[in-house]
Image 1 (cartoon, one colour):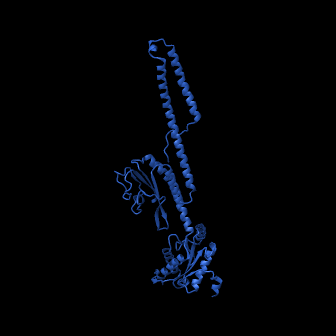
Image 2 (cartoon, one colour; image 1 turned 90 degrees about the vertical axis):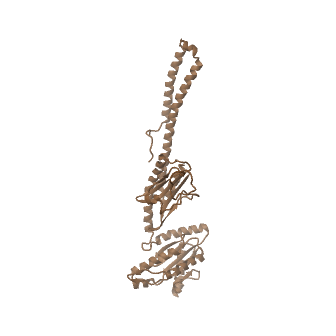
Image 3 (cartoon, helix red, strand yellow; image 1 turned 60 degrees about the horizontal axis):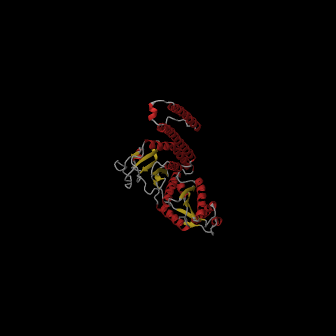
Amino acid sequence: MFKRSPVKKNINPFCLIFVSLTCSLALALPTYTIFHWYNNLEHPIKAHIGLIEFTTAFSVALYIVIFFVSGILFNKLSQQHSEARELKNFKNFTDILHRATSEVEVYETLYNYIRNMHLANQITIFYRNDRSSTDFLWQRITNERMPLCTMEPRNCPLIKYGRECSVKNIATDITCAYQLTEHKTGSYICLPITIGNQTLGILQLYSKSKYFFDDLIVSKVKSYIEVAKPIISSKRAMQQLNKKAYTDKLTKLYNRNFLETYLENQIEATNLSNECLSVIMMDIDHFKGVNDKYGHAAGDAVLVVFAQVILRCIRKTDLVARYGGEEFIAILPATDTKTAVGIAERIRETIAVEPMPKLNDTVLPPITCSLGVATYPIHADNKNNIIKVADIALYKAKQGGRNRVEVYNSDLDLNTLMKE
């Protein structure tokens, strides 16, 4: 936390007035006494020292004392006001952190407060974004034109060892191997945001001035980091719990519960952007036969492979979820029907040649899938209907011989298809 001076009491304005009046009386009494003595003085010195000269000399001495005392009082008052502002700022920072809804929002709050303190010419925060238990990447909160370094996570000493990096003079000190050469002068510090034995973030501060980051500045920044760390930890834990609640345990894809909210949000975004949103419903052909012949463990293995193939075939902006059993659904934002069909065909062709895993010395046979495509708002006008019409298109693909892609059209009707 902040180190404060030993003087902790605030100066009361009425106290200052009282002290000023007391000092004035204390100075007025000896002044009156001295002038009274001077007027009644019968001594040769009085003939050599004129009244004006004596008054001037005494006034100068008096003003010096007054300015000196006023300077001390003003300095203490300014210091206490500065400390009060810092404590208020620190309290506001803590309050906003506790209202943060995500880990990223905590990092953004930390960045904004450090920036508003004007401690550096450039501030950057890197944070670790865990996309899965094994897949993660490092991202920046800001997009500076010229960041401090290239940020190599595999070799960064802060990530590997959790130690801070301080360069007091770029021109003469040994700098980080990954620092950009464009920064030829100045100084910088890199502070890790470490929780447990894992570095989850890095705060970089760069100044154009040499030897800028003294112990006071570093201590102040670290105090903000220390307050943010438990909030980051709690938000990460909450995010992981939420992810488990919305994730299919077998395939690690999102489940149907998450899909409902996500699709609704995407449709709202589609309405605002005047673009299209496409949905692909997918079903493994003859999946019941795999379970019956090879067992449920084999069926689970096939589902995992199918999920991985879908993830490889869709784009980063798309989302895939397990809808139920062997049925999967992909949501493709800002995607027209033609593009969606191309993605569906890629999934169909890829899974047909994908090697299946070996289970109990038995190599499982290849599988195929059927897919139905529908586009909002062309084929449906709301969340429930877009899933319904995509499911109708999927049923048409299965009825048409399986291992194919069908696009919904108004001529397709589920009741009619079931009679065929």
